[in-house]
Length: 429
Ligand code: AMP
Image 1 (cartoon, rainbow, N blue to C red):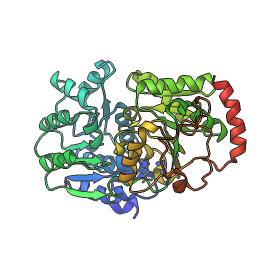
Image 2 (tube, rainbow, N blue to C red; image 1 turned 135 degrees about the vertical axis):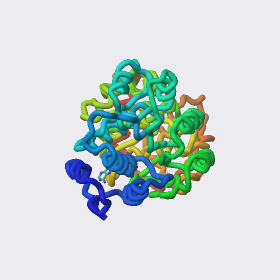
Image 3 (cartoon, helix red, strand yellow; image 1 turned 180 degrees about the vertical axis):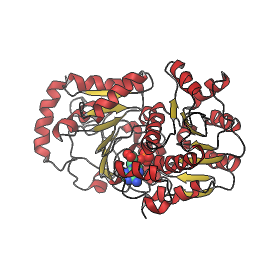
């Protein structure tokens, strides 16, 4: 199928051609005709499948048919609710890109920044409002947002909104919108509360799904390193230096953890930056731009902050900590292998994280390949009383059987790595 077959206005087709989009992705192929018809939709799609364009394109198409070249009178006709600022910015940019040959004006609003310029823009009038839940409710309460003319409501990354505790805000927002709206709900996973949300607020929705629920991106190679918690930073540095990893997105469970990783890498001459909820919007954007422009080789992020990151061809994702929610693992590794590119997702698993690993493997219905030829296996470096063997009680029993004689990532030679790692070790202390 081609974009021409989807009956889209020329203005959009031209913008898509300039973006180099040759054909719709599977989610776009399925969702666009349904949305153009005005039917409610539940889309089960991972990030990286082209789902933003799947809803942005038909919404722009529909609004353009109504507003045409009228630049003056503006009403909010589409509202997109999304969990994070980064994701909101990315969606806003997509509307700008696909709608650049229309008169449609979009505004992106989110918390953590002064509201004055957002309110000014709202006063001037916008057709599409992209918002995070808190700021949206805030500005609505203050009387700056009128949703009476809204027709398209998109709930994006619904499962993440659930994880972040936004579900009640989302329900409140839905109640502020006209009943005759079209509602589109997108989610990478479909936990029960999300299905209930769809049942309560959508009218006879059609369901489209591009990957089976919770399946991981097929092109992503996945590996796990069993490593002591205290050795994770050394292992990270070892991999970045010895495997010459560039363009690496590192996930940590906490903001504090993210800052610590950045500090440790810096101490060893590896430039990186962190993005998380405690960083100002400007600082996040600066770091993200530096990473995208390849000025820094490593970006460290917490799950929430990483949600909206859209970087094409991201080759490496490292789970410095394993997430305690298995679905989060799916989201994380979906950051690599995007838009048809291949990727490698490396996970560090400490002895306290074995149950998380088990849950993840259960969810993705496969065993992740274990890499055991690395210099920091469980407890190997721990000082032991004389004559006592290293304590390997926590080492998973089947590690070797599962992995075989796996080489470290990059397929390098083990002895070279041990030598190099000795050098690294010196620098670490
Ligand atoms: P998303 O799933 O919305 O985060 O999109 C993932 C990436 O795919 C983004 O970088 C888009 O620019 C890109 N993309 C979306 N649709 C297409 C398409 N039809 N052809 C090529 N790239 C696309």
